[in-house]
Length: 366
Image (cartoon, rainbow, N blue to C red; front, side, top):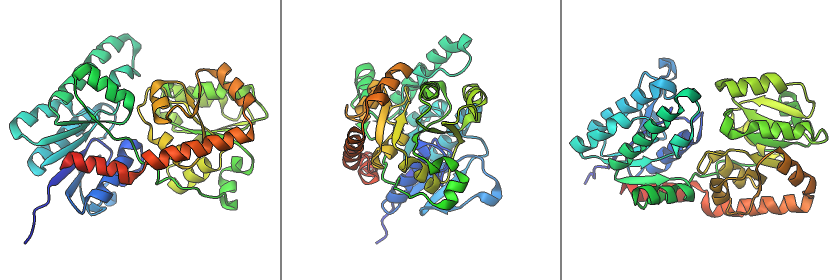
């Protein structure tokens, strides 16, 4: 007897194979591990026809001829949701860009699982003159999406508390797996490509946005010429990143501003051979880059915000500015660094595995 599988749509990312951020990686692992039990469809952004795949991880891919970022993202997500309302039983929606299509839930009565992503109205990155309008709009988007959703997923305890306090809803806490990040040793070929690998260095990986506080790391290492710093970022995505790169690249022999590395093996070499890893994000929930660094067993210093403390269970070391970071680095010894890495790895092995995260999503779908 043939049993019809529940049809599940994964919406709100560039699509898979994952090449970008945390939502894409989450989508890839959900597709990979849920496809035996469910019929998975992943909605993908504008892609040249020659690069399109019909299936990946035995999941159906549907391409929408719009970008998943910028002003097109709202139309892209809304069209994906509209299509999924007809074609799927359960919609897993990542982020609120498709807010205008959420009310279709009342007509189609499909199950919506909404990953809130973060407190988006706190992330005002556009024109400061319109900040109040942007904040009000994002607060409204959030309310609409939560109202029409059956299950809310958050990726950090701080966000769980936020949803409970503001909406009196018990959400599902499901972070991100980090166990796809594995140690890779340095090779001569990679030293030729990334010369900084030849010497001891500290490292950070993040987007070039103001709330990532990359400037604090750079300002710190300008004052620590005996320590090397490698920052991997997509510098060209913002004026903030462009100016940081313009003002600092090749001007300090101990500071290496590396363009984004999308080859996971090469990125793992750069990350896993660093002495100290900096997580400088201030407005994220549980950042995938942090769970990956923890799983690699790196000694991690975090920007001091509640979300980072929750992710690292108060076992990291926290800084707020360049002055405090210099004091921390000056006081660290090899024993402390070694133990910090062990502590981070233990937490990651217990909490940040894809097996655990996928199971949480599976329970929501069922």
